[in-house]
Length: 311
Ligand SMILES: NC(=O)c1ccc[n+]([C@@H]2O[C@H](COP(=O)([O-])OP(=O)(O)OC[C@H]3O[C@@H](n4cnc5c(N)ncnc54)[C@H](O)[C@@H]3O)[C@@H](O)[C@H]2O)c1
Image 1 (cartoon, rainbow, N blue to C red):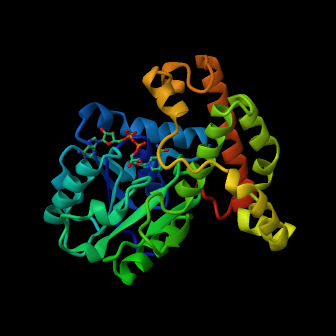
Image 2 (tube, rainbow, N blue to C red; image 1 turned 135 degrees about the horizontal axis):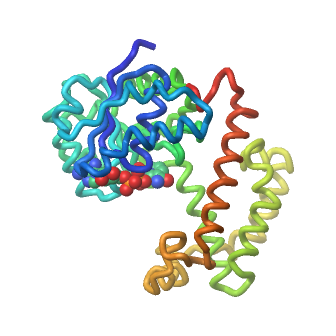
């Protein structure tokens, strides 16, 4: 695919990682963030990631930090917004992008759960607005959900899917603009039941995690849930559902147990305690194990030559 001019809006956790993926694949990337202190560390963060992955740091030279949005997007063909997950903020950004970016530029949001149609509410040229939901860290997780909103053109989806494939990603087409798309709907359905089990005294939080990590979690990278249902038989799946589904949690909003944690300031790693206590050493150890595991999977499952890390 021809080298595209990419602009990333937001230089945080996701923005800098997405910029890295395109830069490693040879594209020029401009990255905008309104906070100079965040832009000041952009190159350093990307260089560190590349060093940790054992990759050449020359890709950093293809990334440009842009303190003005107009400058970042002026000649971009593809723009990916990775600003905070607030609807009003994203709506403002997309309204600005329509004014500042070339008419044929694709405008994508990396929102985790907000429908793309809502984000594009004030955009007139909505045929070029879509979702690209990347996963953290973007340079190690291959999937990108490509979300088609009501007004997104088929050509917009095709162009983005081709671009993502060309940089080593696994794009999937999400055909309806539902909140949470595919991955986060599945993930949060699991989290709701996990929290309900703890809230109802069935087990404690560490036990939930041991059960998942030591049982079906081990299979999930190889066999997805519906492949699993086919393997055991859809008749068995139906029998399980007849007995089990009436008892699963169906609370429509967040569970009281989770709300209480947040109200008590138990925010997880950032406060040192969430469902359980976390020392800084335990946090670093878990992050390290996760990165090593993802690197190994990228090499073993995706293959070094396809190189999700190298693009
Ligand atoms: N962190 C994840 O695991 C993850 C995964 C997938 C998707 N997302 C989504 O990606 C988006 C970004 O998340 P993140 O984790 O990178 O957050 P982050 O807080 O690390 O980064 C957001 C960046 O946006 C910048 N910003 C603030 N106001 C802005 C504005 N008006 N214009 C442009 N940039 C602005 C901030 O300075 C910050 O650098 C969110 O929509 C989030 O839901 C996050």
